[in-house]
Amino acid sequence: MANTDYYKTLGVKHNASDAEIKKQYRRLARKYHPDVSKLSNAEARFKEINEAYDVLKDKEKRSNYDHFGAAGANPFGGGFTPPPGGARSNFGGFGQGNFSDIFDNMFKNARGGQFNESTFSQQGASQQGRASKGENQTVKISVTLEDAYHGANRTINIHIPGESGNKKLKIKIPKGIKEGQKIRLSGQGSHGVHSKGDLLLEVSFAKHKHFTIDEKDISLILPITPWEAALGTSLSIPTLGGIVEMKLPENTKGGKKLRLKGRGLPGKHAGDQYVILQIMTPEADTDELKKLYKKMQDISQFNPREGYQ
Image 1 (cartoon, helix red, strand yellow):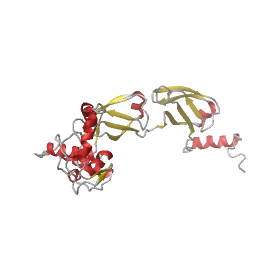
Image 2 (tube, rainbow, N blue to C red):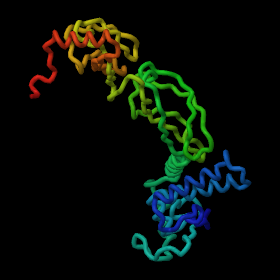
Image 3 (tube, one colour):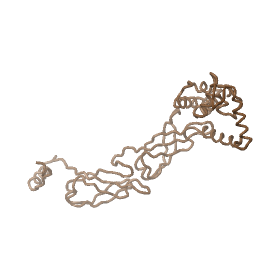
Image 4 (cartoon, rainbow, N blue to C red):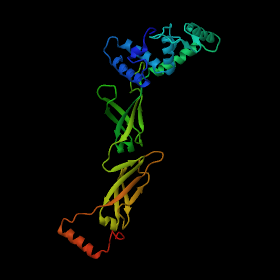
């Protein structure tokens, strides 16, 4: 592409920002990728777009290209052609017309052992390999607390930016995964020249009917009756790992927080589960209950507002 204007290839202005160049490249790459495009010139156009982007995304290559054209961006890639609008008059002390001296010196250094062409080719291939891999994509997914606690294999339908329709994927949810962590699916991201990038699934927790979560700790508000709180009882407490029996002592106050050690999300340092007791008062909706409440009023000296006067 010695005579090609890389800016024109991507459809951007010469003063375009890095973000504008990246955005336009991604749009064109999706349009002309050989796997998805039905255009007859898709493969050739896709190569042109990637070659242009490989130069313009790199500050040093872009600067050399702006001064010397395609040969300046890749001195071993072919002949020299000034960029549209002409090269600038001075660079590193060389006046206009001395470009051949620059390249002569480069090859002299190569023959002198300071630089060898095979090393450059290997480095160039490595850089080209990195550039030819598609970009990673990040998509948020919702996971139940049960799946985070036990671990699970699931099939999900998600929409990946830049692709049409939804994509069905089989994923493994690791046991003890926390909110905000990411599950990496290799080769499921954006298309590149030779390979696709990775897809990163960022985990969020679906709202649970009973539990809330803070990092690895689980919390549960557990309703109890006034007589359970006053007389004591044995409680069956739900946890993500199943039912746990706990002894409730007499005269337990509402709002008391009980701790079940290690009953939060598992891991090297497992979280805990906290149980907040909430005393629920039954409605006086029968004559018998009204009489009972009246009797309690007559015989009890309990005053929850003592000290408020």
